Image 1 (cartoon, rainbow, N blue to C red):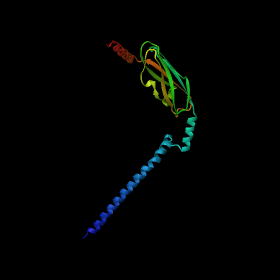
Image 2: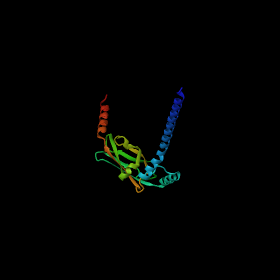
Image 3: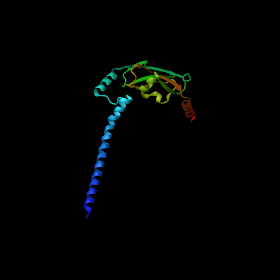
Image 4: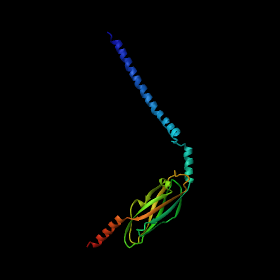
Length: 197
């Protein structure tokens, strides 16, 4: 009977196959862990991107950000077609980057009929606009003021702590325009309600 040598050869092949599979699994596992330091080296050495900060650096940066102050100036106006008065309730505000603040503007409809207006914001200098985030703003929706109505309009904002260090003053400006389409709809609705019995 020659089955013995065949069985031994088959067992050696099976053991060899299992050993290869285990070695491949270990190599894949080791390779996946080596990707993290390789990625870090590529980012930090080649691209110049710092991926992590030590706790001490994080605390130092947080203290520096909380100590930093930025002056926010407020401005407002209306387009000549809109019979409103519109201006900020405060001209300047000193803020700490990373903290949320609230400012208000006052709008008055000086006409004898209801008008819908839409505000268009702008931030100067232009390179600061990406670091100035409005979390709540009257500019997000059209505003309706009845004849002679005055209303305070709030804006909540945060200045990003990553604002370039040489930018110390930001100007937030709004211009209100008459929304002809919505004003016409509003006038049509008002006329319809007056004509109804």
